[in-house]
Image (cartoon, rainbow, N blue to C red; front, top):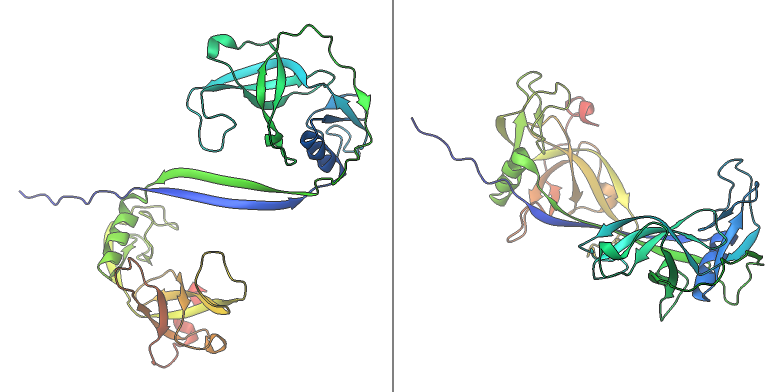
Amino acid sequence: MTSTAQPEVLRAPLVVEFPFTRSLGPVQSAFLSGLRDRVVLGVKTTDGKVMVPPVEYDPVTADEIRDLVEVGATGTVTTWAWNPEPRRGQPLDTPFAWVLVKLDGADTALLHALDVTGPDAVHTGQRVRIRWAEEREGAITDIACFEPYEGDDAPSQVAPHSGEFDEPVTGIVAEARLDYTYSPGGAQTRYINALAERRTVGERCPSCHKVYIPPRGACPTCGVATTDQVEVGPGGTVTTYCIVNIKAKNLDIEVPYVYAHIALDGADLALHGRIAGIPYDEVRMGLRVEPVWTEGGRYPDHYRPTGEPDADYETYREMI
């Protein structure tokens, strides 16, 4: 008896980044402008509680709130968790404690990092103070971290604040980033390995007999495993499309260009790809296309017209 060795399932590091730009309302603008000037502001809710960081609407009544007050730069740890292995972008590059700190004069706690030598050096009820960043720009990172504080001064009393600052911060860019290792699974590993050979391989559902491309390992309709591999294409039919008029960052394609859903011959699900080799305003539903591969490419660079007559609508209407 012989056995067929299964290909090694692919794995690769993947980074998803999305820098989100947003404008600030008067409350958040005042809070971040204050941090830049080493002032911590909170806001009074309808029942008189002081929230830090401040919000623009009362969490209980949903009323708009604008009564800004200045609170202290010292506070008390309400709870904590030890972080032995800091990650990229975190406040400190050495082990530290995540802490919730209720600043003097505030009724809610602020999440930040506490710079201590080890978990034995932090405890609930510990007094701490803000360590300000040397260079401040109007962001939460203007608080570099918290540090233990042995002072015996009395907790600060809140004082009203106008929220007015010279050159107020009116917008921020929030850097969202996710680093992880991605594994496409057995079905898509087979699909990707076939693409390296300039073949497109889908999988057929044993129940409804539809061929899915890219394969998912299971039929999304029937919920059963799809183990029967089927080579499809290479030609296909444009089922629908969009004209792109905005140039994407780091994408060396001149606008306008066309992205389309393409039903490869023999497949029951359309995949998407770029259409080239034809003026963008001549792309149409039913256009017959074929893949164009680049040297060393692991997937088609784009699809171009084959010169065949357009496909009849009835042959692809179920895949629109």
